[in-house]
Structures are given as structure tokens and as C-alpha cells.
Image 1 (cartoon, rainbow, N blue to C red):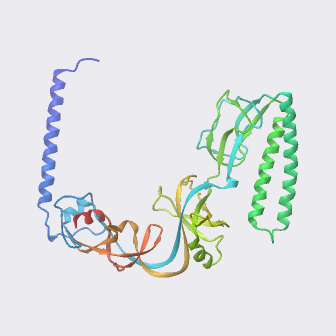
Image 2 (image 1 turned 180 degrees about the horizontal axis):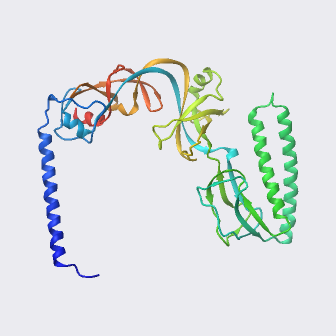
Image 3 (image 1 turned 135 degrees about the horizontal axis):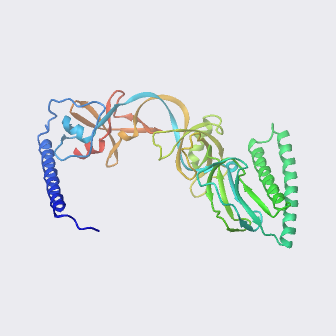
Length: 397
């Protein structure tokens, strides 16, 4: 590395001294500005619907639950407000759960016989694949006994396939008296039997080389295959999940069984799903099933919802919360959940009562609906409430 010129070294030191001087001047100017802010609210009018920053010492004065904040301080604290609204709200049951692949939308791909992967290219994880798309090619290595065992496996697979087809046909003829869930389960078994039979047939084909293909269309979520890799039966090489629709698997408290079933037909009821990754978005869902056994320890019963995921935002394994409405809609005052702060155990909402004054109202909360909460008392429709900066105001009380 070449030595640094004395001229450039001197210039660098001067730049550092200049930056330090400017920084001190800006800090001093900021402190001077805050010290001049009016503690009694002054005469300047704050911007409605705006809020700006973090708590600033000396920027607000408080008397009881009333906080006086000057216009400039409101800008620095980034305070934003919105009116409380009154609308029809139904009581909701909230259920926490986890997103999971549907049984018919989850496929594992493994080699039906020992061999070596000879493919030179593989689809990457996250790639959309078509049903039947080639995933890998394997050079089989069957011994005599292995070939005989595979022939036996193929015969069993064909027998299972034939029996499953008969079962599906019989259940479809009895569709008026048989639950749809039983038919779907039989169709899943049929699909699995067809896949097994085809794989065994390919392995016993004229050549020793066979192909691994995607059983369903979806997104490749697992790929454990490389050129030259030795493979054994039963070891998962690829996993494909259909993300267009997912399940939310959760637990329903037994005390909520009554309100849910009393609201009418339970299975098939519409619901809304929220996930932490997209707090402002609700995904349409429907109730698929309610378990038949209440857990003796948790006093809950398993429930499954199916959620639409056409845009592909959701992923299996994400945490989720399901809201399902029960009872008749009633008029209520609703505020964003972000407006609620707590003073100890008491919930509080700050209301913008005058251009430079905010009053903390202790409130009684009701049903939560998505990212909003019903306020049963303490705030009226039309009150301008703080949605950003409420915690800074609470700290200034």
C-alpha cells in the first residue's frame, strides 16, 4: 500500500475537526429550541393527523392526565391522530394458530430404489414447479433380490391402487349420506397409490435410469439433491407445497364452542386471518373442521381453517391469529389498537382536545376486531385520538 501524502492527512484532520464543530453547534441549537417551547401550550396550532419522533426532555408539561405540548414539540414527537369511529361490530372469537400445508397440497419426493443422481441441474428452493415437472434423474442400482422385492412392491401398489379406486367410486355414489371429508381422504389415498404405482413401474422399466417428478404443482420448499449423490428409498430429496391455499391449525377453548355453534352452521363459516408479517392485512378464510376431543390439560379442541393465499404472501410455519364473528352486529366505538397505552394495568387513550393539549382518558375495552378494538367507555365517536406518539405522551404525564 502506498504511503499517505502529508497534504491529504492534514486535509482529513481538518475535515474531522469541522464535522465535530458542526455537530456540536447543531446539538446546541436543538437544545436551545426545545428550551424555548411554550410549556402552557402557547398559541400555535398543531397539525391534525400528524405526529413526529421520540420523547424530548422539556418538550411537554403535564397536569394530572392533561399534557400540554407545543407545536414544534408535536412535530419532533411525530404525534399522529385519527378520529374514533362508530360502526357495526360483531363479537369475535380469537384463535391463535400456525399456518400449515394442506394434506393434499404437500408432497414429499424420494427415490423408490437405491441409485445415484445423474442430473446436472435442479430447480432451486422457492421455484414454482408444475405437476409432473422433472426434478432429478437417478441411475438405479438394483441387485437380483432388490429387483424381486421391487416387483413385489409394484404388485402391492397396483392392488392398493385398484382397491382405492373402488373405495372412491363407492363413496362418490354415497355422497348424499357420506361426509365430504371421507371422500377427500379417499381421493388423497388414491393419489398416493397412483404415485407409488407409477414410481415402481418406472423403476422396473426397460432401463436402469428413472426420473423423479413433482407429484403436484406448487413451490419447491426442500431440495436435497446433488450430482453424484447416492440415494436410498425413503429419504426425502424434494418437497413441494401448494401455497395457494393453506391451513391454519389452532386450539379453541371449550368455553367458545357454545358461541361458535350457537351462531349457526359452524363448519364453513367465514373468518379473517392476521399474521405478524402483515399487520395491516386480513386474509379471507373459512372453518374446515372442529375436533371431537377436548384436551384434558388445556381444555381446548383442535380447529382447522383454510386461508386463501393467491398472492403468495403467506408461508407454512408462520404464526397466525384467526378472528371469527359470532352474534349479531351492534353499534360501537372503534379505535386502532395502536392508540391504546397502559398506565400500570389500566388502558388509556390520549385525546387531542385543543391545538396544543392532550388528555389521557382511562377506557374500558371490549371486543378486538383485527387491528381495531371496541371502546366501551372513556372515548366518544369523533374524538381525535393519538395513534402514534401516545407512549411519549404517557411518559410526559
